[in-house]
Image 1: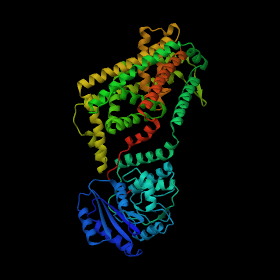
Image 2: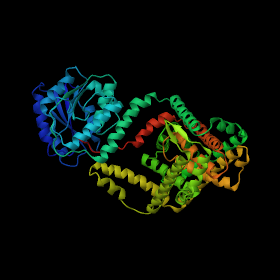
Image 3: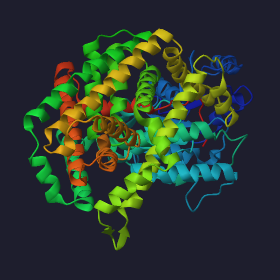
Image 4: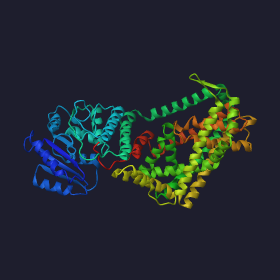
Length: 618
């Protein structure tokens, strides 16, 4: 390392029109307050396809204070800065945008804030009361919203995180760089947030700023990039450190118990439900678990066939274990985070890219919806269209008295009618979605690219469109293959039939004539299980707890002579048996595959991050 005090890095991408003037202004300004030979200016040229590399090389050859660091591939703004900082020789590392939007009269204050040792990090700000800033409305709204979200979610004290005018000490950079994960426009925000969290001295001071050129704010990039990176960092800094396996399992268990307790106490007589459950034949209940267990190797075989058609090999037992773990994650965590766990597992252990991993999950969901639709979806839609739901609503209204919640009286019949209509809507939507995918399976089109680029002309839009097109293409690859379609389709039907047979064994475990396995009851069971799983499409609770029981009970009670408390008791036992098998299988699979569920959830956040490829100014 030389005795250079300051290294100024200028991140440059296709800046042939301005880079020479920017370097000259930077050298002149630094020379006004730093001794000769104590500073360098580095052009961090990030895979340019114009004359920027040629100009930077010429300037470096003519002036030993200038260096040119080249990258053959696009690294993104953060990646280019980090790459250049690692190779810089100064003890104070500085960067600012090459358009010189920030008045260079502030450069000495920026550099000396860190070089003096008073602060570890310094940043200019356009959002402090003392600022003199003229900014277009589009930039102002976007920047203000972004900084508000960062302060809210990441507990930052800064007013402006994206001002391209920052300095950091070499020691602080070396301490933080290994933990900064973003390589694009969020990089400097992440540095500021981490520096504050680690107790480094960070200074923010007002600067005069004037926008130069057209804004690079972009709808697609901002929605996907900004949101995903803020959420990723929030999870990493605020949630993950507290999320041990013990805590997550305990939280999931509490959620399950609370959901069941609320559902039982609000709608039914608690004693009647428990009485019905206490009279169940435990041997038959255990048998139902064994029956349900047989469906899991079928799930693994189906998933193996899907990935095989996408070009990725795997064995049935590994796939079964991955599904066990992901479904356990869906029971423990809300919003189906377990799906991301499976994408992470097949990527880490079988090198399946995230887009293909999620596509395989989508294919599985499509065939699940197909099977459910064949079993009951069309029947449910027909009931609503013909008024058949009135039979269920009237039966419930006659059996269950009105319920008062918060001073408001709820009519059970009306609630049942609404619930069935919502389920019918979900079923109808599922039918339409599956139909649309099937109809488009053999079409080669760039509709996705057209839609995405219609709202964005940024290069990031091409990236987003490419990811989505790979996803859609993978789905179509399986659906358009008749052999694969038949194998996966038949397998899905068998899986759901086993699911229904499990429920029928649970019915048989409850004594009484009403639960005798008649053809009508078998039909109602198919219907109840299908509608219950349709209700779980809405990720409102871990594992669909409450949603499944409610839909299941509505169907059984409305179509058979089974009393409401007994129907609800059956739905609870059926769901508990299935969830117990899932959790047991998940725990065994985690031990067998050496996978930590909480670690997998944390790592799977990468799957939802869409990386930006163009550095914005705001």
